[in-house]
Length: 151
Image 1 (cartoon, one colour):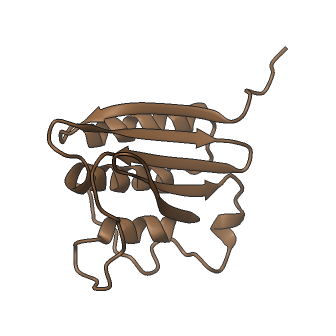
Image 2: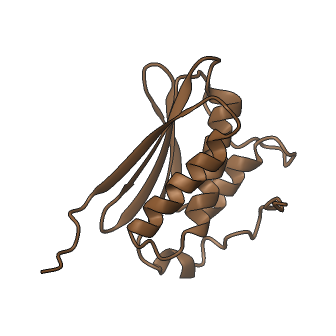
């Protein structure tokens, strides 16, 4: 008998403070989304890249790392990046290049926020499991953010 997997599904990976951690995080997330049958992985993968990059550049003190945690239940995909650095990530009021990553997360994800941990913080975002979020009028991916070209 072929049974549905038990929900919630959780995967996590600790990554070191080094440039190679960003593609490793993306690959890890891509595999999790494929295994879970997530229907549209592009937006969550871009958010993983942005949150991991922010942790690497701003949240991880030298000699430390960060944790990427992904959880899925029947309704929601949640992506969390845990780091031990200080600070309260916010979208800056100016539209310069700094802060663009959180602007991208804000546009693509259904929700995002920052939680406390000791030491540091958790920056998270969530995506609805249904296609409803892609047809709502309140979010149009890419409408008010410029996504950088890769390559």
